[in-house]
Length: 457
Image 1 (cartoon, rainbow, N blue to C red):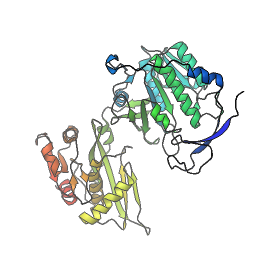
Image 2 (cartoon, rainbow, N blue to C red):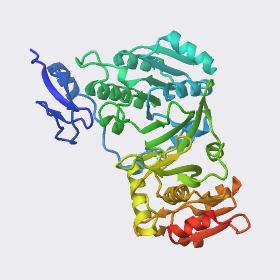
Image 3 (cartoon, helix red, strand yellow):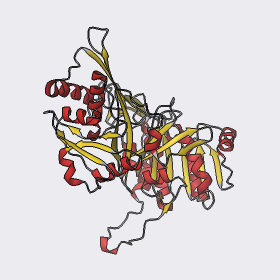
Image 4 (cartoon, rainbow, N blue to C red):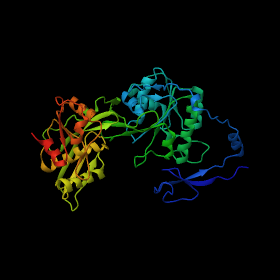
């Protein structure tokens, strides 16, 4: 006789389980993340079957086959770059992002290229087959090797995968899939975890790659338990404002490649289009002879990208001055304002200060510090920075400028786009091999020197 079902509380952030509810999770410290789940007891028959399953035998590492890694190219070089060269056979990839950012769009678009030689199973729990057909027609997807399946029962989906044996599986989305044996609702912690495990157990032995779409919560993190990100082989995030056309695809986990690469796309009427030259696209429409604007170069993996930073300092109309940063860390901005006042003598304590990175980029690299500081000083003094000048460097708390990496790649990218002067930390001069004929390199040691070099005629 089977036992009674019991109620457990599971944290949606870390997967911590408890017999009673907590306002604050004892495992990770997050508030209001304990969700109630009804857990059915394991029957004696299923327990006996699991105890008699075949177990794998330990094998010496020297006896394992060393086969060359095989990848499917998606037809989008930007996506292949983020994945490390393409989709690895047998891998499980999670794509996440805000609603309407382009997750389902990019999956359908790569089906047109992959469908030439591969059989693809597209499982949707959110749209009907007719809705998918309308979107596929708009995107120009006409391959006959694309099979559409509208189903939410994960057990039925895995049966079809074993029966059809497709070359690629796409699940849109994992939050709509459910196990009928579980009493919890779709999208809950237990359902998301068990459905992902079912896909992994089904596809891995058959060497079938699977791409799973995941929703995000209001904080921008992947909805569901954190263990979901540990199960999959790669986690890709779509970044960007839905009101803007540019989309950034970033890998935060990749077992088969680097996590430093990004892909840049432009959302248009016909879907996502690759941006092969992001630097030129980000700098289009840059104002000339206007104070408060400065160009810097950041490294996204092995790719140098030029970005325009705009700073604005104006008299405040309130008791406390406002601080706002878009595309740049807010706390880092406050730190730079403190260094400018204490070490360089530029006072912003009674001024509103705003920072904006044009194009929807988010700059996390310390090399953007100097450009942010110079743009704020330029706005404060109302002196424009020279149009042919690029600035990069890390700012220390003592007001000194620290060296950064990949100097040659940054300077070469700036020279390719027509810049002729580069203001950089003094210690970086000995690391560059770029000839002075291509670019005038100006080494500076502090913020005042940097601003003077960037504005001198």
